[in-house]
Amino acid sequence: MRRVIVEYAKLTTDILDLLVEKYPEGYEYEDIISFKNAKGETIKAVEVKTEDTNYLVKISDRLEQTMEDYADDEDSFDEKEDFDVDELEEGI
Image 1 (cartoon, one colour):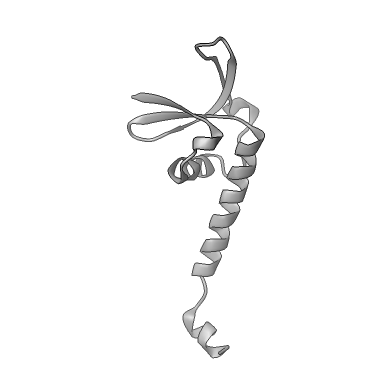
Image 2: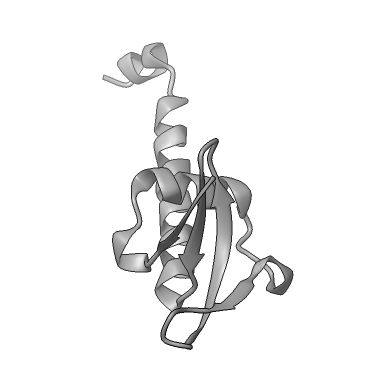
């Protein structure tokens, strides 16, 4: 299985989907993985998996905010899909 480290700036919508699905209320302390990179710097990340890849997404303040915003946007989109077309036409 491949392991890929992903920074906030390089998140794709697919990885964001995985993050929001796995951590709908945000991640907790026990979800955080700490490791040293090749430069000896300590990196903190959360893990999400697909069939063939383990993604370690670096933690930052921006990551949490992006996850929250993304989840809110999806909720808004889902609410729009719930409209009954007949009800909308009655208001016209």
